Length: 233
Image (tube, rainbow, N blue to C red; front, side):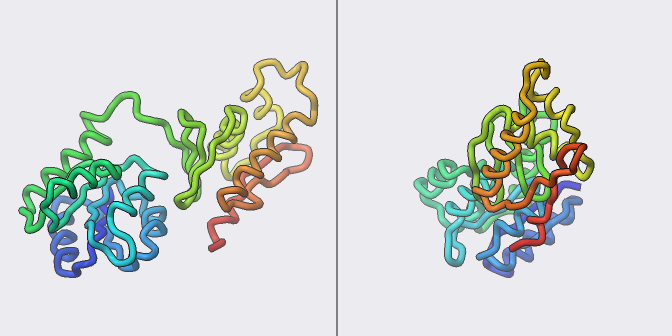
């Protein structure tokens, strides 16, 4: 079931959207604590976001930029603002569509279905970017980037290969030989410490975006992703 996240501070409008969207079989979640919006986003992992512009503390443009740092899921702005510049800003800040209030439920649902088809259905690009995810950590293979809770950092191809192997093997151990084979075609001339050095670099990169003690060394075997960061605030 596809998941829709509603970010709307007007309780009546949020309830109305919740009720209408659920009628069509979608799983719906509504943000209550707007200061923790990204926590909800990472927890729910929505397929689409309905996002108001006027929100407490930070506006919808800000939150759309935060979402775009970690996800390409469709974002539809819903706002009472009708100015042309507001719609331009919505698109320039990462939005995919714009609906003005008051709105017709039929229009909202048509736009939701359209965006979901484009992102995941029959209109989806065959070259959709590959993203590997584990416990909120996202690895963007084509970009050579890792993202976590709104933070991102560039990595090398070797580092990406190591992280990908650890994420795909989780919670199992990724053996040293398997890691060496994935990263280097010819292991004959690879020094024993080469993998250790690369693992150390990966640990440092993960620590830079707030993830510590992520890689556990299993003596004599290899390495395992250790998702202790899930329980750390």
